[in-house]
Each structure stands twice: as structure tokens, then as C-alpha cells.
Amino acid sequence: MSDRPIRLIYFAWVRERIGCSEEDVVLPDEVKSVRDLLLWLRDRGEGYENALSHPEVIRVAINQEHVAHGESLADAREVALFPPMTGG
Amino acid sequence: MTAGSAPTVRIQREDFDTAAEIERLTRGKTDIGGVVTFSGLCRDEAGRLVALELEHYPGMAEAEIARIARQAMERWPLAGLTAIHRYGRIEPGQNIVLVVAASSHRQAAFEAASFLMDYLKTRAPFWKKEHRLDGTAGDWVEAKAADDEAAERWTTAAVGKLGG
Image (cartoon, rainbow over all chains, first blue to last red):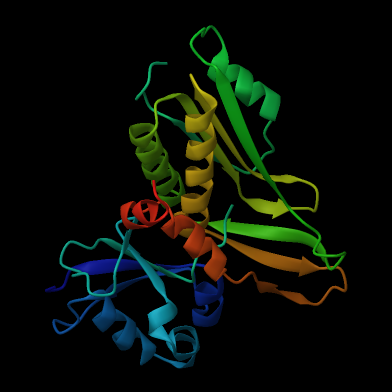
């Protein structure tokens, strides 16, 4: 990952619980996948823990496309975290 | 517009005019035999809600609905396809979403509209928050397993199980 910053964007109750709608972070080298990211974020404070206590329910998009939790962050510029969608 | 041409996708705060959207899709064409429209409206949930607040992911909302619409254009012989989704505060009785599918024959138009709605509900990045009549802070609407199942039935395996 080196020092490349990634933009994180949050929606709906993930945004409310974390307390901000977006932020830029530099990930440590060991954070390689979406799953790693969710676990790393969860330890950043109370709001993150409230939002991500059940990481398996969180939906994730990398560069505005849906991905599974096993997906690599290698090409990620923008990562969005959000609950299951309720449009329509 | 010929079969396979680009669908129209719009994400907007303002309301839409269903009749105008049908007209836009069919104007000047003589090969369309059927137009199916689906309108999704805000419900008041037995008087409990004064409004829904629709949050969306700008950019991805357009991109994801366009991806779904292109899949529908590839899968069915459509003469035209339009999908419009609103965001912001929407009150009971007001429009949320519109799908218009046009084809030579009705079956393709019915199926494409149904497919688009099923996929849109489970994949388009929108979230509904309730505003309650009693003024208390509303909840985020929870996703329904039935919506996932509705989308799942369009996968190849499920279509096979249903006998095509």
C-alpha cells in the first residue's frame, strides 16, 4: 500500500455511527483486503466499533463497484462502506 | 433508438412525469408493440410516516443502475429502457422510482422491467430513513430477504430450476 492515501466514504447508519461522511486514510501494509480494512477500522474508536461490530453485514464498494470482503485493496482509490441497500 | 442502444438513467431530486417519459421513449418509433412502466411510491406505513429521506451514493448510483440497465438490454430485445430514481425527502404518495421498458412484444418489456427493479432494490446504492409522524427519530429501513430472493430468481441457475 505504501503511503498512498485511500478515501473512505460512509453511508446511512454506518456514516451516522462513525460520525463523518468521508475521510482520507493511509493504510498500514498489513491491511490488504476489504476484510482487513473492516477489522482495522473497528479498532479506531467507539464510533467505528459501533458501526462495524458485525463486519459481515457491511457492504463495500471499491471505486464505485460492489466487491466481496475478500477483494484486494491494491487498486482502491475510493472505498465506500454502507448497510444493505434499500432503494427502489 | 435501436435494440441494444444505451438506456436512459437519471438520478434526481425532483419528481418525474411518467407520461412524458413514455413519450420520450416511444416518440417517432413504429416498431414498439408494448411499453411497461413501474412506478415505486412512498407509503405512509399505516399513518406512521410523514416522509422518507433517501440517501444515495452520487456517481455510483448512476453507474450501478446503468450497469443493471445494460444487462437488461443485453438479455431482452428492448427498443428502449429508462430508469429514474429520486433522492432526498419524499412524502407518502410521492414518486420514488420509475422504470419504463419498451419492446416489440409485451413479454420482454414485462420481464425487463421486473428484472431491473429486482436488481435495483438489492444493488443500487440508496438507503431510506424514516421520518415519523410522532416526531421521534426514525430508523433506517432494513433490507428484506424477500428482495434478495427476488433478485436471485433471475440468475441462470434459478431460471433453470423454474423451468426457464
